[in-house]
Image (cartoon, rainbow, N blue to C red; front, side, top):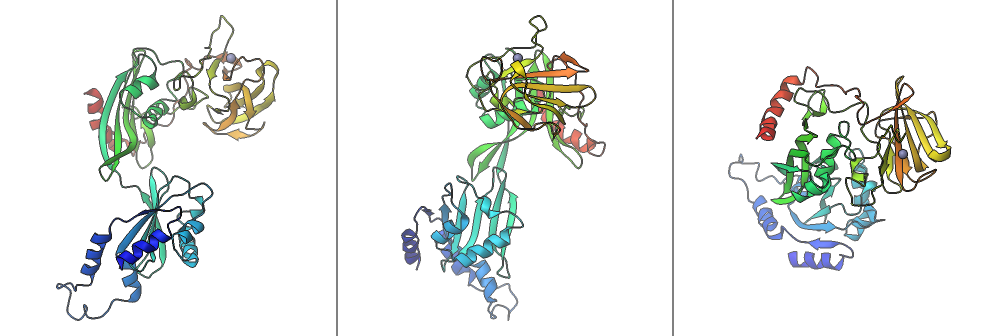
Amino acid sequence: MLVYKIQYFFMHKGVIRLSILVAVGALLLWGWSFIPNPKEPSGQQDSPAPAEIVEANTPVLLEKEVDINSGDVLLGLLVEAGVDSAVVDKLITATKPVYDLSRIRPGHKMVLFFNQDGLLAKLYYQIDDEEELWVQKDEEGEWTAQKQPIPYEVDIVEAEGEINSSFYENAKAIGLDDKTIIGFADIFQWNVDFAYQVKKGDRFKLVYEKRFLQGKYVMPGRILAAEFINSSKKIRAFYFSGEESEGYFDEEGKSLRRAFLKAPVAYKYISSGFTTGMRYVSAFNISTRHRAIDYAANYGTPVRAVADGVVTFAGWQGSFGRKVSLRHNSTYSTNYAHMSKIAVRAGERVKQGDVIGYVGSSGLSTGPHVHYELVRNGVKVNPLTEELPAGDPISEVDMPAFLEVIQPLKQRLDG
Ligand SMILES: [Zn+2]
C-alpha cells in the first residue's frame, strides 16, 4: 500500500518537490492506535470510534513540500498535488477568518500532509519569519485554521565590536547579519544619525536572540539589549513588552523613541553607512550656507516623514526640484528636496516613517540624494544637534516588570 502511494505521488508531482519522511514511524503509530488501551474502562474499547474522529486522528503517512512560484494560487497547487477542488474550497473558506490564503507568496514554505488514504489531512504554511499557519480537520471533521508563532528554539547571545571603517562593515566582521545590523541602527534611529554621527572608535554591544529549528540555525531574533558608545556618549536600550508599554527603553524606562527621527532615509538605504556605493553627502554648515543635511542614496530610495505632520507643500520648487514640506506642530517643520517622485499631496496628514517621496536628483543637484531641512520657528536648524521631545516612558504599571526584565540584560552589557 505504501509503495502504491509513493508511485502515486511521483506520478503527480509536477512542480511539486516530494518528501517522504515519516512513513515508517507513522505506520508504526498507525498500527499502535488500533491496539486497545488496557487502561481504558472495559466496554469502551469495543465500541468503534465515530468515523469523523478516526479520520481526524488518522496518522500522517506522507509529507509533501510544495514550491510556490510567482503566479501560483492555492487551488492550482493543491489540485495538482492530488487534492479534490471541493476540499480546497472548504479549506480556503475555513481559513479566511484567520488568514487569507490568496496571499500565499513565492518562496514561503508550504507542506501538505496526507493520510494513508491519500486524503489531505493538514496544511502548513509559513506566513513570515514570525508566524505559521496550520489548517487541519477538527474532531467533528471540519477544517479549522490556526495561526501561531513559529516555535523556534532560542539562544541568547552577546556580541560586541568597535567601529574603525563603518558600522556595517565592522558589525559584519564580528558575524552579525544584515537583519541584526539594521535592527541595531533602527533601535537608535531617533537618537543617532548613522550616516553622519558614527565615528571611528565608537563601540557597540548587543544581547540578541538566535533562532533555531530542529537544532539548525535559522536566523537572528529580537535584539534584547543594545549599547552604543557614540563619541564617548553611552546610550543603552532594552526591549520590553508589557501591559501598556512596548519598545526600547533606557535603564530608567525612558523611551528611545522621539517625536522626530534623526534622518529622513532609513539606515538600510544610506550609502555611506550601509553599502559601498557612491558617497555624496554634505553636512549642515553655516559658513557654506548649507543649512540642511544631504543624504546620498540610490534613485528611488524611499524618503520618510521624520515626524507626524501635515503636508504643506508638494511639488516643484526651482533649484530644489521636487520638494515636500511638512508642518509637525507650531514649532517645527521639515523640507525634503531633489526627489524623483512625490508620494503625497498638500493637505494630507502623514505619520512618522510614512513614505513621502523617493530619492532623485531633480532641480539643482549633481547626484541622487535627499536634501533635508529642519525648521524651528522659521529658522533652519541642525537636526543632528537639535534636542527633540521624547516619547512616552514605561508606564507606572509596567515599571516593576521592566526593572526585573532588564536586570540580567544589564549584567550582560556590563560584563
Ligand atoms: Zn543639500
